[in-house]
Amino acid sequence: MKHTLHEKIVVKRPIEACFAYLKDFSSIEQWDPGVYRSRKLTPGSVEVGTEYEVLLKLPAGKQAAMRYRQVAIIETSQLILQGEGENFSAIDTLSFKAINDDYTEIDYRAELELLWLPSPLTPITKPILNRIGKKAINGLQRALTIPQAAPNRRLRDNILDKLIAPAALSFGKRGYLSLPRKSHSSRMDGKVVAITGPTAGIGLEAACELARLGARLILIGRDEQKLRNAAMQIQDFSGCNNKAIHLIEADLSSLSATAAAANQIKDSLARIDVLINNAGALFASREETHEGFERALAVNFLAPVLLSKLLSPHFNDNSRVINVVSGGLYFQGLKLEDLQFRNEPYDGSKAYARAKRALLYMSNESTSKTSYFTMHPGWAATPGVAKSLPAFNKRLQNFMRDGRMGADTIIWLASAPELQAYKTPQLWFDRRPHAFDVLPSTKSKPNEIQQLKMWTEATLKQFL
Image (tube, rainbow, N blue to C red; front, top):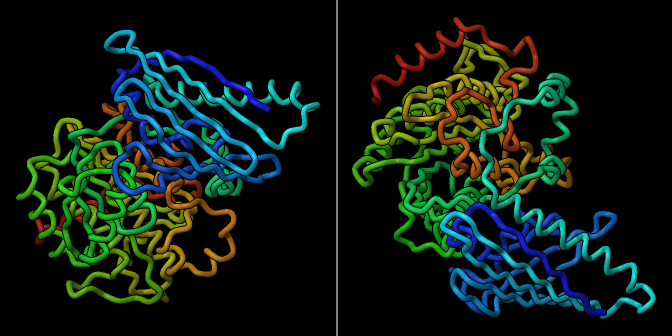
């Protein structure tokens, strides 16, 4: 059976922005609800011959793989791709026409051939395919439409957060897959993004997508070879030039090394548009750094606060600081009398969660020119989780998100235009603001938060 899907939309975006978003066909997973996952198989920039793997959603949780090849690219005018699957094929054509400087018409045509379909099923199959095509083009229109305002906290989320268990169910991949918007279509050309912990997991996934959006990257990590490997992966994914990636080697468990990294960045670049404090570590046993700080506190709390303070003179009028925390903080409160975990048997998970809660409270520093955001990624299957929480990772591996799903809100917080003037302290998850506290026993009083800030200022003073 042969069938053609044909749809047109008009979006309020310049033609260059529309074309740039769709040129890399692996973005289809962000806008087509019928696609589970897509990836560019050919490393480097997109050109004729670039190949993609696309996993289509089927009933009963099944998937079907297609392999697409870019067969034509007419800059800002047309994209043509040819796809092959088991017993079916497709030729997808996307044509672009500028209505004016602000609006673009996109013409989407998919010529399908289903080799396996018996003729008697043709009459009922075509309407189904038409609905699939309509959902895809509606998803594309939503992906290219910039919301006029940032989302507000919903009563539904407040209730679910307080109930804990229903909210936790959304921490896995089902929560991400149910999101109405998954697109990253706002360009970041010319923006400078510094990110810690960029060599694996959600940090690497965020760096890849931000580079694809055109950002210049500063990768901050402790292992030079891992940084170089990450830079290569980012270039393969995004097609960016190696000059768009700057490497800074620094062990963030050392505050003096963190300060040196900040000074190196300030000497190299005139401004920072986005700082992503993503690096984190969970330790099985208590150890102190050479500077006398418990390691989890140093890496997960003191280092990101110090880095933010030292780089703040280089923030511009719309800079953003994104602190990555953990949903585990919901179950741990501050222990001001024992921030360094000296007075009770050491528990790595508790130390990690307490440090992340402290970082949450220190993220309320938005100024007239800088917005501070805090987010948690849900339960993501990353190398860090597999190493530090092997039993948890094994038990929930079929439920957990992959790194790209976990990184989604980081990328959105870094790039979304609707957040430009956002200053309200919030804890973000899946692109929505959520409660800081869900248990009365973990909620800190204002005077306790002030004590934390005073202790932090005094502790970091020698490194500023």
